[in-house]
Length: 320
Image (cartoon, one colour):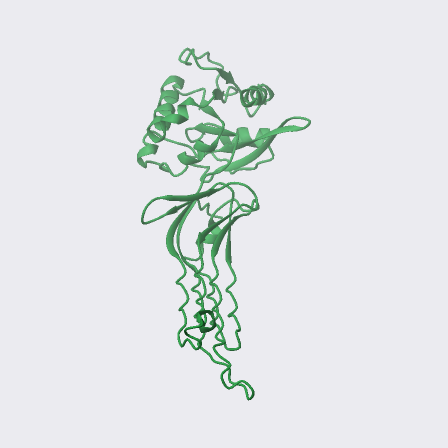
C-alpha cells in the first residue's frame, strides 16, 4: 500500500433549500393567508479523526466531495428536510489548510475530534415568515444560502515519541524490529524504507513509547534530493531524536550532515533532546576516533543484540 501523507481535494457544502411561496386554499378559509414553509439547511462537510487510519489514502481516492443540499420548503408550513453532513475520516496528526490562501484551517490530533471545514447554507424563509399586520399576504420568500466551497490540502504528520534519523542502510529498520513488534521491510540496498514505520516499544511492565522509523535521508534531502523532504516534516512531531549511523562510516561527517539537513528544514529540530546510536558493531571492532565527544552515544549491534536493552533504557530516560 502506497503511503499517502498529503492530498488536495475540493469540498462543496450543500446549498440551503429555497423558501416556499404558498397560500392556504381551504373551503372554510378563503383568506387563510400565507403558508409557505422554510427550506432545509444544506449539509456541512466535517473532518473527523479515526485512529484506525494511518494514511490519507482513503480520502485521496476522490478529488471532489459534495454534501447533499437542503430540500425546498413546501406549502402548509412544511419545512424542507435538511441535508445530512458529509463526514470524512482522517488519521490523527492531519493538518488542514486552504490551498488558495495557504492559511491553516485546523489540526486534528485526538480520536473522535471533528472540524467543520465547509458549512452548509441556511435554508431560505418561506412567505409565512413575512406576514405582518401591514402585509397579511406576502408573495415572496428567501432563496437558500449557498454552501461554502474550498480547495483544501491535507497533510499528515505521524505522531511518535521517538524519531529514528539516519542515512539509508544505517540499521534503523533492523533496530525498530528488534525493540518493537514492527516488521518493516529490510534490505541491503538504498531506500529500503519508503514509508515511516511505527513501533510500540515496551520498556517496563506498564510503560511504553512510540518509535518512528523515518525513511533514510541523504545530503540535500531538504532541497528535494533522494526521497526529498517529504518525510522530514514527520520528525517535527517527535519528542526526541535518535541519530543512527553505521559505525563503519565517517561518523562525524555523517552526523554533521544529518544535523545540517534538519537545520535547513526546521532549525528548531536540533533543539530536541537526542541520542546518537552507532550501529553494526558486529561488523567492525575497530575503535572509532571521530565520534563527536560532546554527543551522548551508544554502540549497538541489532544482529547480536549488543546494547539493545541499554539503548531502550537510555531512550526512555530521555523521554522521562
